Image (cartoon, rainbow, N blue to C red; front, side, top):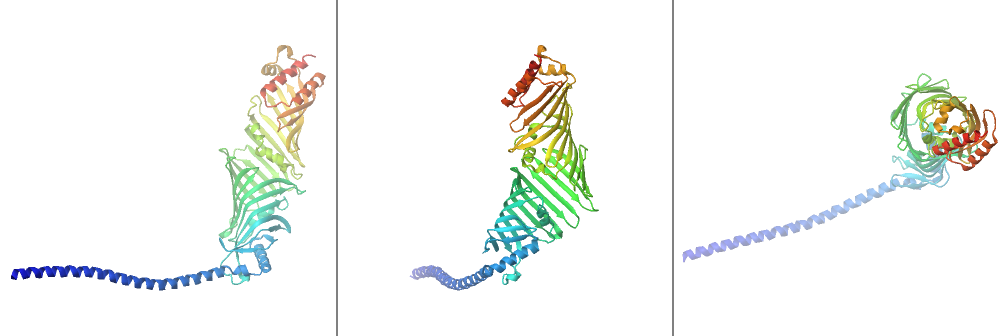
Amino acid sequence: MQKKNIFFKKINNLVLSISKRIESFFDFFRQLIRHRKNFFKSFKTVDKKIFISVAVIFITVISYFLIPAFYDENKIKAKLENQILERYNLQVKFDQSINYSLLPKPHFFSKSTKIKYKLNNIANSNNTKIFLSINNFFSSEKLEIKNLVFKKTEFKVKSSNFKFFIDLLNYKKRNQNIKFLNSKFFYLDQTDEVVFLNNLKELNYEHQENFLKKITSKFEIFNIPINLVAEHNVPEKKFFTEIKSHPLRLKIKNNSNYKDKKLNGELDVNIINNNRKINYILKDKYLSFQTNDNKFRGGINIKPFFLTSNLNFYQIDLKKIFQDNSILTNLLKSEVLNNENLNGVIRVNTKNIKGLNFLSETESKIILEEGSIYLQSLKTTFKNAVIVDLKDTQLILDDNRIKFAGFVTLDFINIKKFFEHYQINIKDRKYISKINLGFLFHLDEKFIEIDNLKVDGNSNENLNQFFDNLNSKRDNVFNKIVLRNSVKDFFRIISMD
């Protein structure tokens, strides 16, 4: 009986222990829930205070940044125009109302801004942004410009006002930046006619510490993209420029200094993996230059302008030089070289002309004279058989098409060798010593017109008819078969006399 009571006591104790544990477990969750409710009540109270504080701060900051929107427009226009002139050496005129925007940074903007240089309009911007320093917006008098951005600007520039871009770079203020984006550059002649148009994707002026001034630009010349970097180190009196064009496979670096009243420099030119260095000196308005290998050398009188130059080439590819979109073709069609103030003499010597393997060393003399371009002389020898001499050849630009008009003399020094080259029939071989003729070469259409032909000083009616017929056909002068057949027909006709 006693053992039975002990057993029941143990069972009771065990049940009580389990009950207490279960009760303790549920008490824990009750307290956790109670504390959680208290925590969220406390958190909600704190959260409301934080939210109100943040909202007050946000409204205060926004209100501060919106202060410029309430400035008097006429006063702020005058303030900005005067400050831009003083800080950037840039004269602007806001034609329309200016507005204020907070994003992406506080700035005023105008949809029509004139840019002036020496009292004349040089550009018009359709989207101008004046970014502001955020130091003090409480007073319009203490407003400070931080950066300028001009978009969709049309520059109309002449030789007389091109110095605008140089003056903008050389201004003495520091830490001032100007950007021109997605703009157009019209170069005008003296009659305000457009000579050429360039797309100016980007032009950045950076004025840094220690008076280091820098330009970076991306633009197009005749649809050819070009990158430009220019730096002016004022204390050390040094210039650095770099021009790159991927399509042209061109890279030009220039390092120069302007100490001791003269400008010394070196051009490092890399074209299609061919590198050439050119040293130059500018002193007393005379620029002299020469390459390290002495193949190119010459000089330029700056005022009055006169260019003298000697150029020596191992080989020239005429087809590439005069192809439709080449730099030279576009330059000639732009009429930049037809400036009345551009005068000079350029002598060109080349060992070979690509595609014309039977010509000896070629010497030529190009004259730039008061807006006209002449090939005064070009002399070479064809297969040591004929001396070819072009004289008084003038470049003519007619309806944007390039033509060359001039005279040719052919002196036969070994006509038998000439006959053999063109495989002239023995019965057609008439031995002559000289041919004189006038020509008009149409570069774009690649055909030639011949007139005033004389053989050994005499005219030939049959030959005149032959060339009249040949001129009307307008055959491609670069076609070797056409050329060979024309030469054969020529000697067939004169052999009849």
